[in-house]
Image 1 (cartoon, one colour):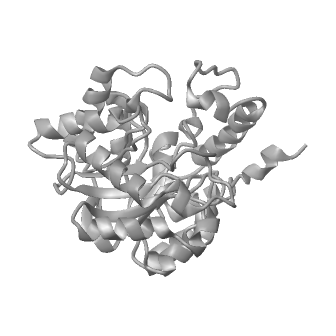
Image 2 (cartoon, rainbow, N blue to C red):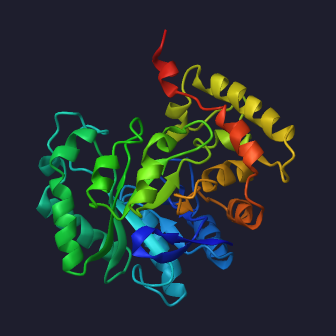
Length: 332
């Protein structure tokens, strides 16, 4: 396992982190707790020192499982060698937020304080390593009052670092906040298909020494190369909506083009999951990539990507040609 410095916070974190959405058990089909615990234990054994979770992942269940494993290892949920990032959802309303929503109404101060206390309990922690707002709208950059509450909580010793997770359709929405030095970290979608962060966000993060957490590195599983156009997802599985209609067939077609590019390259190994991870890690602004890990096998395969050579410049450049502007999905 290789390690990187997490922005100006200075933590030494594994470049492969543990994405803990699926172990919450509410969005990716049935998930057995024993399997989840085994996956997390194996990831930590392989050198993972960064875990990303959220309050909405099983309504606290993901956080509680993480606390259980950390306790086994003599650590609480914050301030130790294994860093845990969690996320607070906005108060009731549309997700993602509407442009005319008010930041102070979706993230009011009392609500944020209550939510921080909730994560402190669920993670069995005295302090939270990193608290992120789970979604955002560019409109709030004009008056990001929620970050003022976070700054106060930081001064009070409740949290160590402040971050925001980008909205799905605006990966460069946080650049103004980074330039104003209001964020310690950003969480962003960045993969072979979604390369928009390279336009601005990654460069600004590097300039202002902001930690970058990369999510959705596999495009919700498609870039592992395991799906066919006949794949079916269970009721309640997040991917059932993500790949609805003709999206799955078009995604599979494009994945096969990516596979061909990989197979004709000089790089080894050529397995798609490790290439997808190493594509994201190629950018020097990236601190950690957080693929989801539901099983021991997934933990082993994902962590192994860090033991491999970095992606070659030639393959990295060739994969850039597979950028997919998803607005195409909304065209007739």
